[in-house]
Image 1 (cartoon, rainbow, N blue to C red):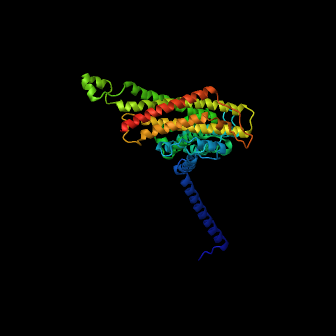
Image 2 (image 1 turned 90 degrees about the horizontal axis):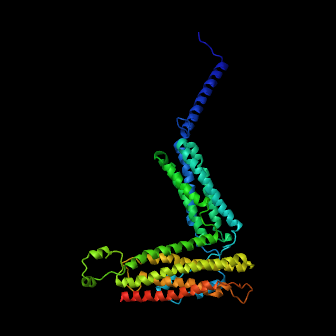
Image 3 (image 1 turned 30 degrees about the vertical axis):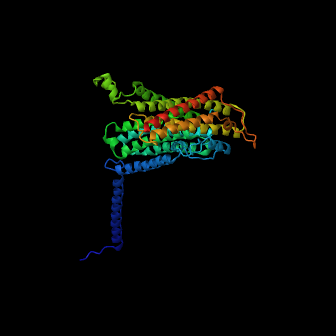
Amino acid sequence: MAIQQNPSNLSFTIKAEQKERSNKVKAKESMGKKSRTKDASGSPKKSTLRNANLKTLETLNRLSRALIDLDETKNTKELSSDVASSDQELQPGHENNLSSEKAKTNQTSLPLSHYKDNLPRDVETSYQMMQDGASLIHSTSTKYTLLGKINAAEGSKLTEELLKGAQFICTGVILLFSEEHGCGRSCRYYAKRSARAVIASVIGLVTSFVDGDAIMKKNLGAQKTGAVWSTCDEIINKKVPRGNRAAMRRDLFTWIKECQETNTEFQDILDVGPQVEEGDKDKEGSDGWDSFCENDGGEQYTKTEYTIAKPALALIQITKGTIQCVIKACECIGEHAATQDISPIQKSHLLLYLSKLHDLSRNIGEGMTDLGALLYPPLDVGSKNNELFLEVMAHSINIMKVCDWILDERILLNEDKDNNDSIEVSISEEILDFTKKIKKITKVRTSEAEKALSAAIL
């Protein structure tokens, strides 16, 4: 006898089975999602954490490239017509001389908003942003490294804080590059350099966790964190020069130090004296041992090279004295711009005068290093337009241009019959007298070097 089921009971049974199958499918899908994002211990998978670090790393690299693209030498405003025309007249009359072309600079100096006076509020705010960002990175990097080794999930969350600190620093630097802030080339350079150092160290730290090296290699994470601390401390402890005066003086004193070091190095070679020629050795009955002890054939000039190196080294010594004059002149003009009751136009002119003077000084500060690099024996003087000859002449021209800028009173006074913005300010007689002496001795030493170089070529 067949058993008949109640249709209502059969329908209920089918629905229950379908619901049970549906729940199993959902459970499997849920487990699948969890397995893709978490490991057996319930923590997020390494791939998810790596993606978080990679995303931060990509953004940090974009910030780094943005800093590289910032040009601290880019002109944001044209020089006033009086200063520009004065600079044209100061160009030396060596139109056909290659050394003159080497000495020319077509770059327009950046206008400044401050020098010896207090930093403008906008500039202070920009530096504070950099400091806040460095402090955030400094404190976060420690936690990032420690947690990254213990719990990768928690450590990866801190990449956002590292990125936030980096963005603060970059924003502060970009603001310092704006025309409204009135920061010169040196000020921008040191801010950009410190920011790039921090970003590079953070990129190194995050990369070590992306690659897994910080976890696998002992002490690597601590080393990377130490590098981050070091770069951040430069900003936090205000070791980066703030403002135009501090940055420009940092440059000037750096060049003076390099002049001293270069002069000491080559003076030691000159003190040994020129090499003894073969004929002279035979006359003296040298057995070779004394020559060996006296560094014969080593870092020593021949007699011809000696006559060239001596006046060339004198130009490096003169460079130091010229930069010292520049420092004193900047202090004199900067003091007047900060303390005297003058119009904004007059103040901007004085600060522009300082900016141009510093740019001219940069030519001799950096040119001195180029000249020194060519003084190592043996000297290359094989042709009339050899590199040493061109560098000596170019360096001499650049020194003269600095002296002319200090001595030419009409540039400083901004004399213009069509306006009432002329300035009654002068550089001290002590500075002017010393500058005149430098100009005179530069001509003498350049003539000596030129004659020695010409004789060597003949």
